[in-house]
Image 1 (cartoon, rainbow, N blue to C red):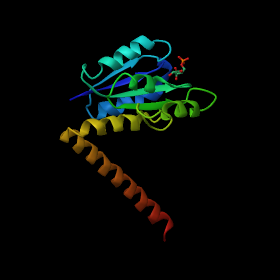
Image 2 (cartoon, rainbow, N blue to C red):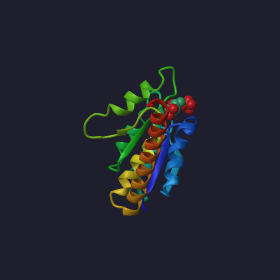
Image 3 (cartoon, rainbow, N blue to C red):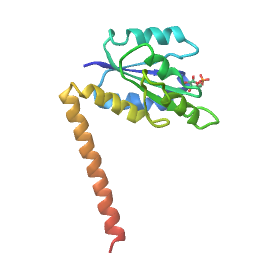
Length: 164
Ligand code: RP5
């Protein structure tokens, strides 16, 4: 199976990124986690992205806050799918990172999830790998069914309590 890379701009992003790490582990998807900053370690970030496909990765998750150019900088150096997590890390509550990550000019796409949306970033990476992995696709289907059951159960309880 291809690996998923999780790159964060600072180790201060780790509390957010942990949800992505946990979600990938739940699905048994191999992952590597690194701290590479687009502005503090630009050479390392570039080298990682340039070699990612040859090193067995199928998708890259990039988490960064403030003027968050990490996802775009990685995407500039690979044609692997890059998923950006805008991290809430400043007085602007993550809106700065959201706009910096999502507003990529045409030609270099970054699939951007919600502010601090690390679980969805991992699920999107898993969906990308599942395009060519039926076992992984079955795990995703099963999780969707479980989520549906949970909501139907909650609905039944609420209806029972309030709809006499
Ligand atoms: C970004 O700046 C990082 O991704 C982090 O979210 C934010 C703050 O970084 P630190 O100053 O905490 O290292 O580059």
